[in-house]
Every structure is written in structure tokens, then in C-alpha cells.
Image (cartoon, rainbow, N blue to C red; front, side, top):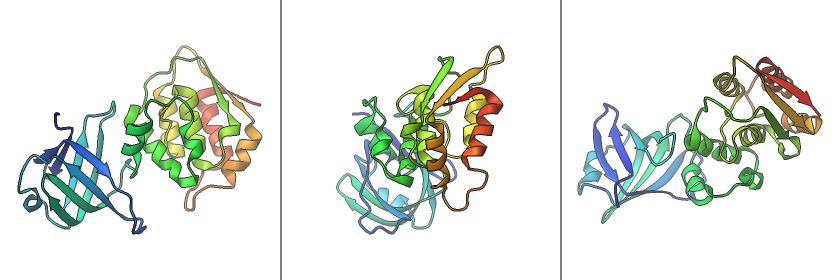
Length: 235
């Protein structure tokens, strides 16, 4: 089995590789530190190469977009060829659980996020980003958005990604990223028509669940953004 995951120092030097990365459940529920198991590490003294407090990057080409995130080490445990890293995840697109979601449900075609609660949908959005990333085109001329599946703020991005590209379709995780996605797939010769069904129901769900600290993220702002790039029909 070839190595799939690689750990890099902040200076760009590759330190070691491993055959498998396992996202472990956070029983501490601290919310800022997470446990990972790196299986089949390529060097024996890997626990000597890594130092607490320093920032490292884990990368993989396992998925279309690639897969990477930065982390700092809080604690290391070495057991044979498995390294357990208790770490703090730095900012970026990665949400803990995205890798497990891709591996276990990438063959599913339904709306996976419907079984996820509120902000846990960010895990699905993160997985969608690594699965396909920013698309530069869309095959369909007419996009049907099922508003009945938009139950909160983050499911807006899940449903629009699904409507445009199918399973694990990525259409941003905030309004600015959503706008960037629409720009990427824009057509100079003809516009894309978006039919948003049960829109009023969606608007209420979005506006009642906007995360704290977000501005210009009401349903009105979303509608205005779509109308800048597409022909929008609200039903």
C-alpha cells in the first residue's frame, strides 16, 4: 500500500509520510484540540522530528482537490508504527470529520447533510471543498433548488452545491465564497437560470439561524448575490 499522507515542516521540508490518517472522536469535547492517528509512519523516530507548539502541514492527493490542513502539536504518543497526535487545528477549509465523511459516504447520491445538525453541516461543506473544490463550469442551463431542504444557514450552501453539481458539490461556506463560486461558473454567452422552490420557507430558516458575527448574510443578501450572476426565479 502506497503512502497517502505527508507531513511537512513550516519551512516546506517533508518530514515523513504515513499510509492512513484516522480522525478520532473528541471525547474531551474541548472543541479546539483533536486527536488523530497516523498509521504506518515511514520513519522510526517520528516523535523526535515533531515538537510541541510548532506548526506543521498534513497533505494528501487522495481527493480531486487534494487535502491539507495546518496543525500545532499538544501531545504525541508513539505505538509501534502508529503515531497519535493530540493537536490544535489552525484556520483553513478543513473541518474535523470531513475525511471520515468522504471515505464512508462518497458513494452516496442523496442529501447527506440532512442528517446533520446546524453547524455540523460545515463538515459536509468542508468535505465538498476537498472533493471537488471550485468548479469552473456547470453543465446544466437550469438549476432547481429545493428550498424544503434548506433548514438553516449552512444548509443553504449544501443545497445549492447539490443543485449545481450533485453530491459533494461545493458552492462556498459564506456569502463571499458563494459569490466567488458563481463568478467561476459564469458564462459570457448565456446566463444560468436558478429556480428556487419553496423560497419563502427557506428565507425564514436562513434568517433565523445566521451564526453570530456574520454580517450581510441574510436571505436578502443571498438573493441579491444570485441575481448578479444568474436569472433567478423564486417559487
